[in-house]
Each structure stands twice: as structure tokens, then as C-alpha cells.
View (spheres, rainbow, N blue to C red):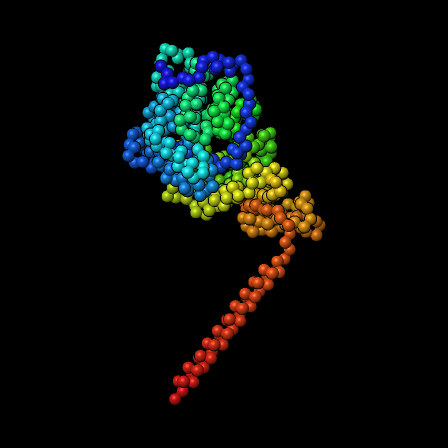
Length: 505
């Protein structure tokens, strides 16, 4: 019946009788900038794969494949992406473009390519010093999966999941309290970990599975590779349950739909109080354990949300990306964000990425802010300190091993400033994005002020004072330029006089 089962049933039974040891989190994951890819809706790179493609049908395959991802890896690297995250790659029933309708847990979906094609994708990613994670569907199988009709596994199932998620409409839910079903899914996970050389899994609907199963599964995967990334994508926006999973399992990271919703609502309109994001962020308890994401495949795109408020794309995305790239925790970028991509609902948000379009200024800013994130350790690993807020201006501080950075985000329609006296005397804040400069004033404080709907990232350093050497150099250059112009004019007048004299008979 089974393709292979290498996990002993007795070992799995024991997971319901004891608590699996919790492994230390992989701290490297908090440095990562992930790029989430829905394979079928990313890019068609191998036109020889015909299969079931019908781009006019939103419920059909549209032709994205492994080669299509390979073709854009250099662009993603240039954008500052450090890890690509791909949707499920297992063989699916007809029209299972999203990967949730798994017909065979041990085979690659031929619509995307072969196992060799996927291994080449993994190799190409690693050749660029990037990582790759893949989605793993734990709780569901297609209703056409042979396991659902096998007499030996008839007690593995809980029936059709009670949800309005279209991706789960043609599935049957595993009963993972059943030791044999649990053993099967643990073996599936170990198979893909060992066979593909991927760097981690995104465990889908991790809160739907029994916690005892998640404990055993994550412990087994970490035992194989302690550096293996394990990300939990919860179906429900329940922060307390997510925190419990992080504390009792070997998960490294979780999603947080509540925070992502606040991010979108705040930056979609001007004059929204940015401190609301900080409040939502603080309520998490362990904010670095949750990744930040503002777009998604099952919802309206952020670009649509702010466009409805007549907000400029470059402005809105500059504010949002600055927050995402300079606050603690990993960042998840949804495919097409960099263009930016529009979508008023799930159907539009899941269309093929229109790579022939885009805003060049936005792409350039995306590269700049990602470059800062990757260049300065304090923006990735540093302690976070709330400096203050005034109306729609938020200022915070990041510090790490002597390096201190200040970030200012003004979501308002007017210029704003915040005075802080927590900076030692004799220092200055040097702006990196817009070359702003903040020096100590007569009251001994520092006024951090930026124009409307703008951002700045400052580096704290000693006040260099007025650079007389540089000013002298500039003055000398200007003086020489003036002298040269005067000499040229005199020379020209002398030449004209000589020509006039020669023309007189």
C-alpha cells in the first residue's frame, strides 16, 4: 500500500505519551528575506511542458514551472532576496495548481518539471549563495489519492475539512492522532528532506495538526539537520496558539496574519497612526519569532488597497518596505510585490507575474532598502527600542555590538519631528537614504524630522563638525573654474579683436 514507511509505528505511538525535546531555534532564520512563490503562477520557463495549461481559466494550470523560477534567480538575488519559498511540488489531481490536492506524496508534479529539474533549481539557488524552502502539506490529501480508498488506511481520515478555502475543496483531512497515518506523514517529510537538499519546510496549516504530531515531526527533522528551517503557517490568526507551538516544538518561525493586516491597513492610507503597528508588534510577546508579510495569495493585494485611497505606489511601498526591512524578524515578500502587482481578490492575486511591467523607481528603492538590511547587522539582529511617535511619525532604534541605527517613518501628510535626549552629546545622525543630518541642538537634544510621507535610516556616529578641508577643496575648485572662465573670455575677446584688425584694408 505505501510507497515507503521507514518510521516505526511504536516510535510514533510514543509521541502521544511524552513531550518531545525542544531544540534551540535557528537564529539565522531571523536574518532572511524570503520570496514566496506560487510555482504555477510565477513564470513559464519550459514551454515543452504542455499538460493541462489553460491561462483563461483561473482554476486551471497557467504554466509556471521550475525553469521559470531559475530564469529569474539573478533578479531575485539582485533584489536582496536570500531565500526563495516555493509552493507544494508533489503530484496533484487534475487542476491542483496550488499543490494542496496531493495524489502522490512521493512524486513531483509533472506540470512543474521532473525531480531532476527540481534538483537543478535547488542547485542553482545554492550556487547563488541563497536558500530554498518548500511548502509541505501535512493535513490533507486529494480525494482521489489511492490512500483514501485503501482498506488498510480506512481509519486514517476525518472527512472533508470544514473550511471555505477553495484550495481544500477536493481534499480529505488526515487523522494524525492515528499512529499509522502520523508515521506515514513523518516519513513523507523525511523523504523530501533527504532527497532534495532543500534548506527547510513551510509546514502548512500547522495549527490544524495535533500538537503532539508537530512535536515529533519537527524533532525528527531537526535530528537529521539541526540547521534545517522549519516555518509554521497557521490557518487561523491565533497568536497564543502560535506562541505555544513555538515554545513546545522545534519550529523556528511562524506567520502572524493579525500583524500583517495592521501593516496593510496602516500604510494603505496617509495620516494613519504608525504606532498602531508597534502596538500590534509588541502584543506578540516574541516578535522575532513571527515573519512580516503584507501581501498574500488569498487576499486583495496591498497595491489595490492603497490605490483605492489615491495613494502613490512608490510612496506606500517605500513606507511599508522600510518598516518590513528594518524591524526585528524575518521578512516574507510575495511574488510580484516588487513590480508592484495588483489584485482585487484571490483570483487576481494569483495570476502569472507580469514581469514585462513594473515601476523602476520602486524596484530601485526595494534594492536599496534590502541592501541596507543585508549590510547593517543591527537592522537584522539588533535590539529594538521604541524612541517615540508624533501623529503619524514613528522613530525607533536598532543596536548591535556598538552599531546604532535610527529609523524614521512618516506616514502623515505633513512634515513631523520628534526630539530625543537619549543620545550622548557630541554625536550626529547621518541619513543613508536621503542624506539627512541631525546634530545636537542648544538644548542638548536631537530633533529627528522628515518630510511628509517619507522615510530615513540614520547611522549614529561622532559629530565630525564642519569639514573645512572638504569645503576648502570645493572652494578651490570653484575659484579655479571662475578663473578659467575669465581667461577664456579674455582670450576670446583678444581673438575677435585680432580678426577685426586683420579685416581692415
